Length: 91
Image (cartoon, rainbow, N blue to C red; front, top):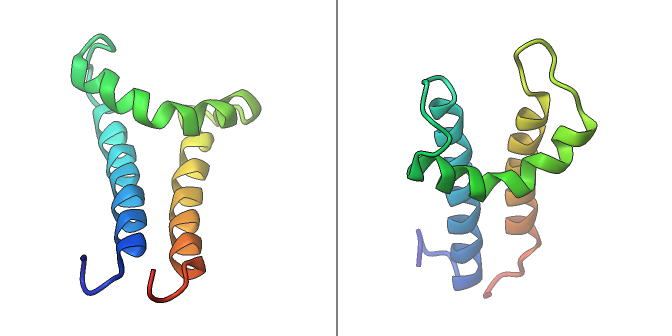
């Protein structure tokens, strides 16, 4: 258990934490000229692409900023909080 949380709470917290860390790593990697063929870059991209690509099709970038990335990142925080609050105690 993680900080005394029940198993379902622990699993959801770890899952969303992993996705948030993947988002942050992708953000940092985008600042450097790393080839898209790099295995680590491909791994991180494959994790977060299903969350960002639907938004990319609907929301155009503003200058050099991908607004869809920010929306997906904050939606992930919101979903994490929502799932944690929705799980009943004892799960």
